Length: 428
Image 1: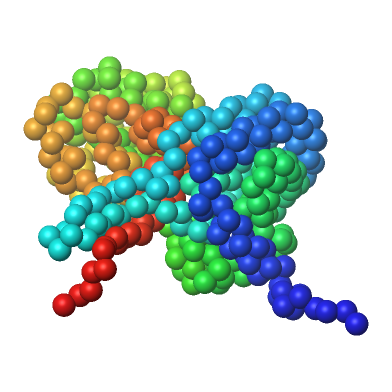
Image 2: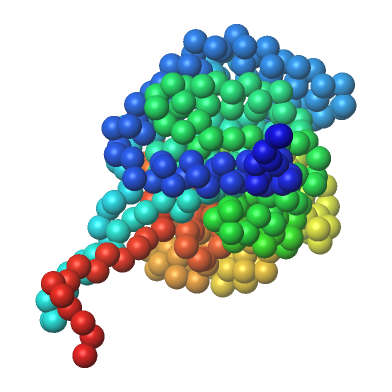
């Protein structure tokens, strides 16, 4: 007579979640050395099995091109031997980072003699829902392992072959290092139903982190019963103040927009103070044209476009809320710093805003009034990044205000618990 497991009647996604929960319990108390050894094993395995990974990725890339996928998305999907080596190097960098688990956030001895400590602990089971980029598969796995969390990875169908190969390599390396292989799992299935199951696995999955476009993020936020950390779309602004250094402003604008257009910290809107518009805009429009950027301009910007090499189209209302992720930028002239702030408050996604100014008073006012995860003064929006901030790799950039905000490194993948130590204490 065959004895059925209590899990046999469950769906594949739910079974994966149960396995992840068991793995998380085993992973949480492990010392740093064990986790670092596993991460180094993962990095080595990625390099040893590069050919296998690249071959799987080539099938995804070929299918994407057959389906008419844009080249910018294909580029994000593509893995080359050099990119795999870079991913392996990133994993080694994660192994070098301090382990947040067990860190004492605060602590003291109470007047009654009880010792009270608040310490960092893993979140438990982290679900990641993401699009296209297979490097996220490895980044997320490495960060979750380092912070003592099990991870359930649900990439897009377009990267299924790549993600399957990567997760297979990671699981083999993790298991070979003595850690539970089920700490890293690919969510079974390619249908939207598997995503819905993951979003409703409350009690098994502790938190979901969506990474991708606005539609994906909003779907997860609105439909999930599992708590969600909302990583943001990036409608980022560069404001050129009346007192800006024009050469600096052009460098920052072009870098913010065109250094890499397909990322969430790329600038999507330019705002220019009216007092500097005549001197700044003709040069800025030419610089954007040289970088291949099309400007979606309001009438006051259009007035300065004549005689420039710029590709300019008249802006429509939708432009102010658009995350282009392409060589496009919206542009407007504003009457004052406060009008720039008003525009940002109305249209920003809360990601990153930059001001270019030589006025300390203007910089202070802008940083006080703008409520985004990052406010840059005389610096490119492209610096909003865990690696650039010195955090190491990041799991995403949170645009919400609860638990985590901005680039999410290892500490943001932990929660806390209180440890109360007494000596026979009872409450009177």
